[in-house]
Each structure stands twice: as C-alpha cells, then as structure tokens.
Image (tube, rainbow, N blue to C red):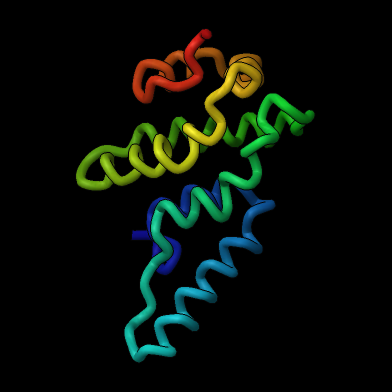
Length: 135
C-alpha cells in the first residue's frame, strides 16, 4: 500500500506532478473530514482521483486544445500502468479508468491525439474498454 495516497493515488502522484496540489487537497479533506466525525482518515477513492485530479486535465481538452507532448506521454504511461494492475485491485482500477475517465474523453479527437503518442495503447484501450473506436 502506498500510505495515505493509496496505490491508485500513488500512480497519479508519480505521473502527474502538476496534479500534486489537488492531490494534497484530497488528502487534507479526507483527514479533516474524518476527524470531524472521530473516524480515522481514509484514502481518497479511485473515482475521486479520476474525477477531481486526472479528469480535469483532459476532459474537453484532449484532442481539442494543444496539450504538451510530455503530458500526453505521461498520460499514456499512467493508462498503461493502471491497465497492468493485477490481483484484487484490477477491477477497481479498471472501473475507475473506464467509467470515470475514458468515457469523458471518448471522442475521435481524443483518440487521434493519443494515437500520435502511443498507437499501441489506443488499440489496447479500444479492445479492453470499447472506447476510442474509429467511428
């Protein structure tokens, strides 16, 4: 386990340095909110990382506005790392990626932008999640 970040949060932290402030805010809210009720702090949910940290970096932007190639490459690395998770966390990682992230950016411009960076990943995403399909 990756401490208070959790395994999913650690992936986000490692791949998106520009997202560290929102991650710290998620942790702060987890600690502050739980202490208000005398409950021990809990790790943020995978869906919180995706909807509040990763998603805003790409929703309505990927393929629609110019994004730094380094950011796109790190996004590809993040997706590959999340897709490579095995064991009991596999379903939770997949669900967070598919339902809370990929469906938000499932359009032809997003697929084209990612195809320029990592065409093999686009094929993997198409086969596994049924998004970024050629329409």
